[in-house]
Image (tube, rainbow, N blue to C red; front, side, top):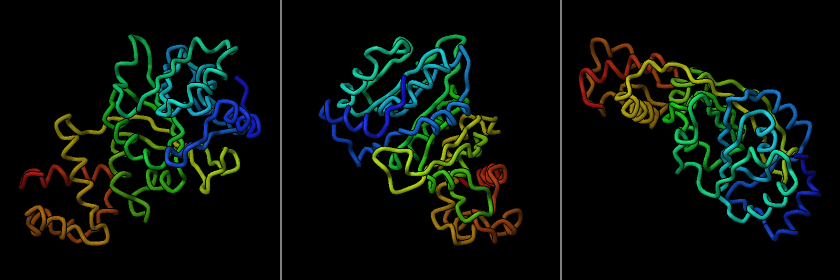
Length: 278
């Protein structure tokens, strides 16, 4: 599948009567060189089934079909069906591409793979769905790898380490379950329409979290609540939970949440769980 130039994509949208939506964050990749660079970073194996969040104008979809066994691409905007039909009409890779016109975040991703297949999550994500997608990925333990494109500001927060001003509750939770690596930086010029922000491609590789299944939900809630007043010391959070500020909690109570690593958060969560319900 050839990459569409901005002019070709504009013409195709005009022919099919589709007006792109800012609300849906529809900014499509149109730079062949950047797509080639991205492709070199993606996994490639006959056992790989790519689950794509947001098919858009199929720029990523076509690359994924070349590198894996098949692609299951979700698209929430039913209007793009006409665009997809035009793009796939004479494409030999169309037999490897399954398009589903529904919200990917409502789907059961684990049900998509068969025995011997490896599911990998992909997507160029709009800002408003980024957090939801990451949280669903965390909870979907049948997916061990992902490559996701975010607005740079969001990606920076997600990949930030403890002690950094961008470090957040989502940083802690995501890094508890995944090694996260910045793979590629993209300028607004490689998209159509041109967005007002830069973008970053992040790679995710799942690792053991050290948490029991029953601990995952309360741990995620614990971390989120600890950052509600991130500039205050943890003593404020402990008071809200009824945790004593003495003994094993005395030293930690004088710290701010952004200085704790994910593993230190797990230790703190378990210590607090022994003295109060979290």
